[in-house]
Length: 144
Image (tube, rainbow, N blue to C red; front, side, top):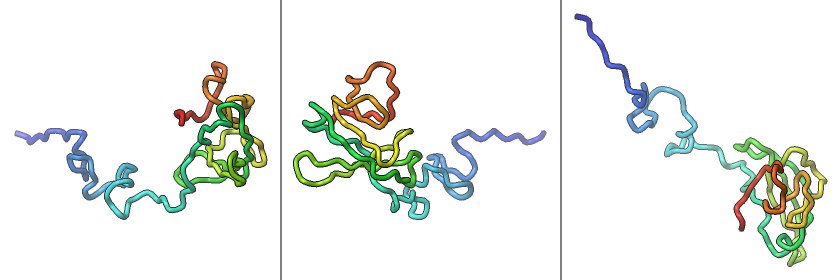
């Protein structure tokens, strides 16, 4: 009689242990780049920083703040470009730099406005309650 073999279960592929970790052969998958190894780790040294909108203060809740887009930069490991936006600090004599995701149509030298009384246009930041239904938005954050 001929020998027959049971097919392998999909979780036990060649070169992988039962936990799904890589043992010997095969390619390095994205999940193992973040894992324990020192060799296969994500390159984070050249990243520019976290992307956040302005903290919601009194000026934003009751009016608006004007900012200037200084630069549009590439952040390694991120699919979208980042914009550096500069605001005047409302309480001290200094400038505050913020990093946003650069939406389509944003350019350097453009003035952007943040706040509940800001106009509805490309690059501006408004609360969701002030926008009409069907508005195309690009970034939504929980309230601060």
